[in-house]
Image 1: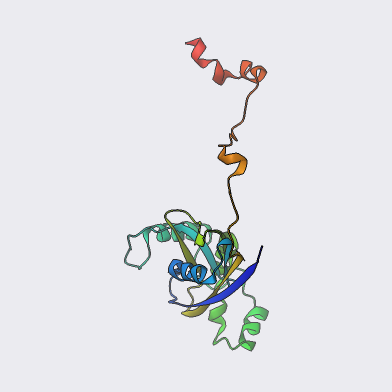
Image 2: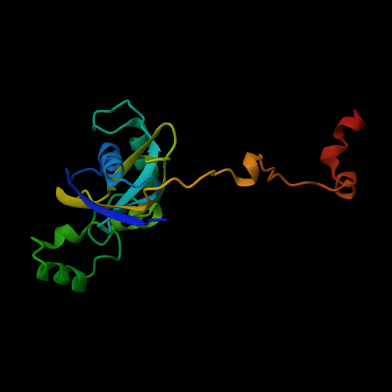
Length: 206
């Protein structure tokens, strides 16, 4: 069976002042379709340590911040867990050595390192997603969209997301595990357990 790898880079522009959610579903679907890979996996990976990738339903409705409702709900939760960086020394990071390190890479000022909230949110959320490719299409779910999230809102930034499609251009045969049998993963209680569990005797006591 032949094995093939295709890699592409998607260039994006984040707006700053508030985290940016980029819907890159169309671009990823185009990459998968053009790859010629029928069955395998597609990895979508952030190039940046303050960014994440998620697979989630499109919320459709937009608020005045140009965020889908579900996106803003997510941002609200992350802000409760990891507050926006608004005060100097609010977090330990960045220290003076790190700020100076940033200057050696051409950072315009120490303020660009005040993105600790973005780093922490990226750690919690993860920087990548992997989706199965079946018969030349992403198997992400009926309503799924792929979003690249830039948590760093210190300034507008140019961003990159890497897409790697791996697999075979050939058919793989039946995918059914145990002929498609529905697997019961619920706990199975023994008769002895049921005899000592009040949950099973409540009806009898009435």
